[in-house]
Each structure stands twice: as C-alpha cells, then as structure tokens.
View (spheres, rainbow over the protein chains, first blue to last red):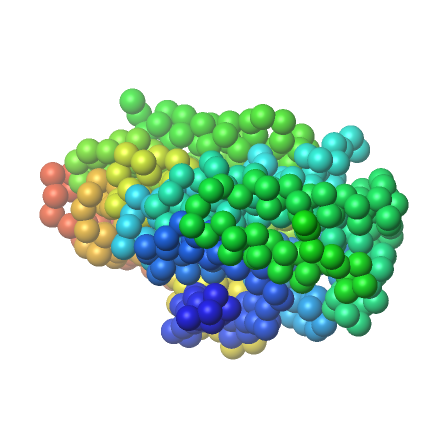
Length: 289
Length: 289
C-alpha cells in the first residue's frame, strides 16, 4: 500500500475514534476541518520512509506513529492561527478553525488533537508496549517543553532569541521526531536518525521563509509576508533571497550525506529530494547533489 | 511517605524536566505559575488512595500517574480561564495565567502541560511498559474527545445540551480517570473502579455548583456567581440549594457503597468522606452515612 493511503487511513481511524458515540457536534466538525483534507503530510511520509528503510516489522505501529505526529502538527497549526498568535484568516485555502468555529472551539480543537495523538499511539501500543512507550516519550519530547514545538512558539514571546534554537524547536522538532519515531517503530535505535530529521527540518524552515516572500497566497493557501508583518526572524531576513536558496541546497546535501548506511539508503535520498521539490517555490527548486 | 509529599515530589520532578536546559524563560515561569502552589490535589490523592487499596506494587508508576492527571487538570484550568471561555481574572487567589503572562503564553502553557502529562507517564513507563501504555490510553480517553474534559468544555458551545452528559465529561471524567488509573498503576482491572470515580465526580460537580452561590470569593480564590453570569447549567439552578445539598449527600453515600471489596475498603470510605469535607462549603458539610 502506498504511504499516502496508509497515512490517510490511519488518520481517518484516529478521527473516527475521536468523533464516535455522540460527541459535541461542533467540536467534532472542527476536528475534521482542522485535519481533512490535509497538506502534503510530509512528516508522516518521512516517518514511514525511515520505518521502511529499517524493515518496518510493525507496520500498524508505524502507521499509528505517523498519524500521531500529523495530528500534533495539525493541532499546532490551529493554535498558531489563533488571534493571540498569527490571527490567520485562512489555512490550506479555507477559513482557519477559529474563523469557522470561533476561538473557544479552536482552542479545544488543538487540545483534543494533541490528546488524540497520544491516544493513537496508546491504542496501537498493545501490539508492542515497549516500543509504544518509547514512541510516546519521543512524541512528548518534540511537542512540549523545554525543546519541542510548544517551546519554539514560546520563544516568540521573548525579547532575546537565538535564531537557531528557535527554529530547531519551532519547525525542526517534528521533523526530528519523524525520523527518530520511524526508526523506533521499526525496533531500531533512534540516535543515528536524529541528524537526518534535523536537517530536513532546517531545509523546511528555509523553504518556508522563501515561500513567505516568493509565492502568492493563492498557491500556498495562506497570506504572504507574514514574517515581515509580525517582525519574525527568518532566513530571508538574515541572508537575502539568493543566500537563503544557497543555504537550502547546502542543507539538503547535508541531509542526504547524514543518512545511516542501510538497505533503504537510496530510497531515503530520493525521499529527501522529493520532499525538497514539494517544499520549494517551483521556479527555484533544484535537487541536492 | 504521605500522599501529599509523593504527589508534590512527582509534580516537581515533572516541572523540573519541562523547564530544564534553557527553555523559553517566560513560558517556563508560566508553567510553574499554573501548577504551583496547587489546590487540594484531589485527583492524584484519589488515584494514590485506590492504588494503595490495590497493593501499590509499582509506587513510581502510581506517582507518575498522579502527577500526569494533575498536570492535565492544571492545563484545563489555564485554558478554561482564557478570555474566549470564562475570562477569569484570578485562580487559586492569584492572577490567572493569561492575566499574568498574556494569552499567547497561556495557550502554550495549557498545551505544554497536556504534553507533560503524557511525558510523565512515558518517562516512568520503562519500569512496566504494558501498564504505562494502559495508563496512557486512560489519560487520553478521559482528557480528549469524544468523552473527556475537552468534550465537556466543547458542550458549552452547543445549543442543545444534556446536563448529565455535560457534567460527566466536563467534571466527572478526570475523577473516573483517577480511580481507574489508580487500579491500573497497581496492576488491577480498571472496570470495578469506574463507578466510584464517577460518583466522586458527580459529588464534586454539585459541591462546585453550591460553592459558586454560597462561598465568598476570598475563600474559593475565584469569582462568585459565574454559573449564573455565564448562564451555565448547574445543580443549584436545577434543584435549588436545599435540593442540591440532599443530592450531594445521596451521591456520597452511593460512592461509598460502590467501593469494590478489597483490603483498603475502609480507608477508601474514609477518603471519600475527607474529600467531601474538603469539597463542601463549611456550614453544610456532613459526612455520608
């Protein structure tokens, strides 16, 4: 089964569990609005790619881990869009959750999706509790405090901010979680996979900064120029457009070089290049060498 | 060691992990503000009481479960106080998190505490992954959708609302989680303990509704008359003050009757009465017979 079908199937099962048996109807609808249809599902795709390269001997656990990671990512988008953060009117080309359902339900949608991420791991965990608990610890580590995406968003409220620390937490964390959790789901050590995830995360951040200045809203589904409007640190602000493009290509080359020796090495290099092609504005995309 | 020392010790260790190694300083401070000093820590006290009655053969796991439950409870208070919900200025006699740190950090505080709850279970889980994964599933079930405290809060955005369903999710869920997780942490089946938790939760809800009309803000640390001000369903609105007091006593008697036969039965009955004494406005408190 292609990764995309595994990912959507696993996400759909998680959403079905969260909205079964007479839930509050508006909150149930808001959960679906936040998760379906999705974006590129990049994080679970990376997770399944690494799991496959590591043998993927517990595919149900890998699927659950991928869905859990994507639910956490969707939760972060819903909360980041709130008026107290970006006050974004649109997301993925449709109204943001708080514009469609109000702020109260948007807060609860993010909360419920975080919980559903952990629930999804626990539900699949009966197959292999030892691996499932390691996956739970990883997901928590890269989501919460002190170094997960919550911490990354928290840095935006500080006067003094180290750009690398901020990006590593805000954007990098879930990519690092993706490669590490892929390895753990397949029964392997996480550590050799940390650098690959971190580098893909860095590449994603630079690409996102470039998209924010180069790509019209109609193509990204979100408003342009948000970084400058919110005076946020960005690779474009630091290095200029040409410098940011060179930096992106360097990072992707480093990502490929960091892939541990394994039977799936070539497949993973291809995955990195495909991810890069999805990430970058069409007219500047070139695969890493 | 008394339960209170075990609970604070376990919560402190969880907070220390969440705020170690150069976190964003304001968010780290906001997490402590939300959790310390605590309220009565009723939920983890119930959890440890049931674990003890069941033999408590893995005290580190029971401690982690108690801390996890309390962190989730604190998260829910932070989010419920937000302007889009109750817009509460104070909590436990000091400024609410969003008044002290702003809305953005209050949203992130709740998110981080939810995650830290699951992290705390995962961190202790290496001792006994099978029990830890069951505890994770319970915590998720009673926190998220479709029937946890997120769902309970979600019902407040609906036009049609069933009072029993609403209370069971909004207030009862974490009490049911407390008794069930206490049993699981000690290696026992959860099911026989469901009714005790549900009834303590019902009693708590009725007591809370009574406090809202009977007790001055100086004693509860939160503003009076919030239920009427927000037109929220309440036991006092449904039955009047005298009717609500009779209902509270009936529920407590039922709670004690529901305690499964076990060596700790008398200790648990005592715990229910002590919990009731803590809950109820001083001039109406009478132990259940």
